[in-house]
Length: 547
Image: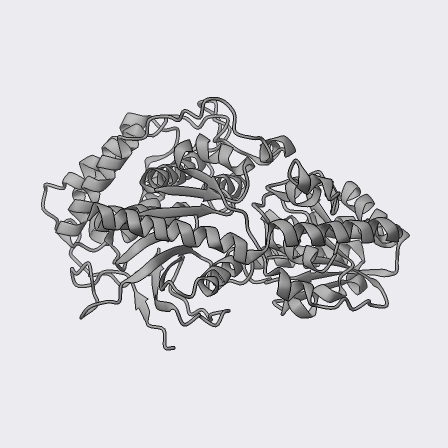
């Protein structure tokens, strides 16, 4: 089947740049920087969902940072009707004279009102830095009465802005460089009394709003249901589509997007930080990082408000959703799953050396450096072992190069192998242990995939890892542990756990068998996709009744 590629940016003042009638899919999947251009994790889940529900048609709305050419890493299923590409930093806009807009720009006044709704300071729960990412926080259950802050004022303002954008049909530069815009930015800056230079604030504001305005301006295809696979820009697009077409919005959060952006922002060198602290005390995060956190928090709130169903992979994640304004009445848990029948049919292939495996992107959030330090300790007392790191290395080239340099520094180059992207079905059978040292995860599919082959796991206590390894309370936990849970950024504890599994054949086999049975009983993909089938059908039925 030939897939039509679309650019979603409006040109020549048209909000729908496509001639003729577009096919209306049953479900439009809203994706940010993932499928079909990035492999593994969320992308694997999306691909399996589309293939697992062949009686539904899907369109793909993919948000990307830029328009550079990318290759698709998946063979797109035949029930996909179109692929729509949206570039946040698209530059091919109409070129209009600077300061040429009419003086009355109501949407800018609404933007001021939106800014006034944001908190003036970032609370301790929002000002998340690396030291506050604790084991306890990842697995806390929902507590309290489930009440959330009132976020209703955001939604009517957002809908007003949608109406203005739809009516005006202007390009993005005209919205961010007009005389009126300059005055509004200056007004917001003065009212907030920010401890930063106006020039730096202006460029931060402009860069933020460029991406947001691009989605407000962009064409989104019609569908019966919109399914956002994160909050952030994808969830923001979902809120827009739901309001424009009066269609249901379903949200599935694998990881909590807003929490992960807070971690990224707190570590990020690309956000301007003012180094001078001569005149006033500074907050925990620099003002520009706070501005980005507030922007992503606002987008999360809008998505939660617009969604009819808010799904996550395990109960621990729901606490974060509540903190960001989700309605507990909309919340549901549907875990990830794997095709147990296919993966469990693979036969183990023992190697001359014991193989320690890592599957994932070589990026900071996976904390590959802790893994490398851990295996360096392992090799000193158990030299007959190797580590294979299987996953893309080009997403964060600098971090990958730092990992290569660390391998050289630790003098373990002869025992470390970066494979890049590979067919994991050819590699899983050769592994003896799977290790994850991530500082943030949701419910890692790679753990479930390893379980299907009876491979024991060493994983940090993040996301659903403890529940996967030790089992949920009840019959699941009674199956026994299928690996070992460790603390974050702890090479010594990780090394000790790996050594235990390498040296204790009995424990390794026992844990592998428990993991295999756990995957078969609770995480088989066809059972879990059946829940999405029912969710889609009920959403379509509800929409038809309203019409």
